[in-house]
Image (cartoon, rainbow, N blue to C red; front, side, top):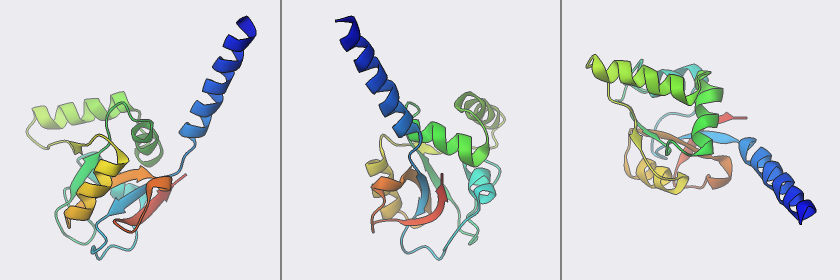
Length: 141
């Protein structure tokens, strides 16, 4: 029984390692004129430093659920910040009246659906979820 528990634990840790290494893509509406974005441009939008896309259009950023592994990976790789730091930054912006955090959606499927339906939307999903309903403008390893 102890060996079975150790094997189950090892398999869970291995699976968690694979999940943490999934590629993340930043996506926009397929009709967007944007072909690509830099991590700095994306970071500025998701940290409330700008409200516009590089095209000049008002950005409508959408986040994944706070509990989603893809969210942690996105913020860590794109902004260099951990979830607690991002939450604290948004708390300061909201308190000072200088911003509204990205709308939070439940899954990559929800993000794709929102981005596909809104011309100025920007979000992020696992690369494995990418399809023709959205356009990738940045891939994060």
